[in-house]
Image (tube, rainbow, N blue to C red):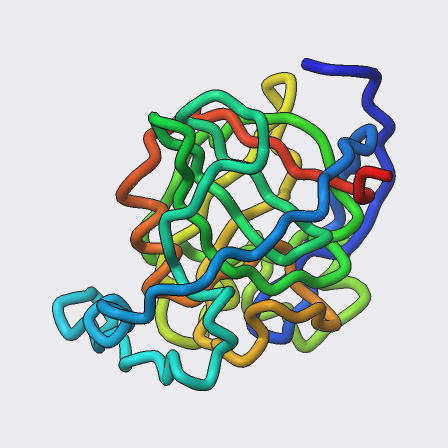
Length: 227
């Protein structure tokens, strides 16, 4: 682990709901990257409906998302070795670094939690169609969430669940940060900063990422831009 860690609380959520109080880490800087020209071939298939899913997913209207935020292979600008997830909060990108100096890049939407946590950790585990359980502190602030409390077993998976089709759970020093990479049906928030949420991808993209990375994958969340 690089550097000392400072813990402070903030909200994590998804699909328009703030979801947890968690910890933050020492800031890790990010560079501003040049955006390569986009090859738009294949996007119709990439973002097509997924009727085979446990909860069938509709197609994404990808033409309404800026092309730079659509899933594509690019040169790796992060300096990280292959097999590392890098979240570039300054540019709203998530990279999965690959061999040969390349990376798979995804556009992400970020909420308060997405900007307030930075540092290094691992994907301790991942879940398909996860349950969502807001912490007791959050339920106390928002009593309308009581039906989804830990005591009541959380929110069932499904298209309205804030964690979407997949969730990747970030741990640091063996502890759950309560920080997630997760899916969202809100395709219009990709590339934007929204009022709540952590790191959200469209469901088709988070499924692709989920299928590419095993548990214990290293992750670095980058903070302020390089000078």
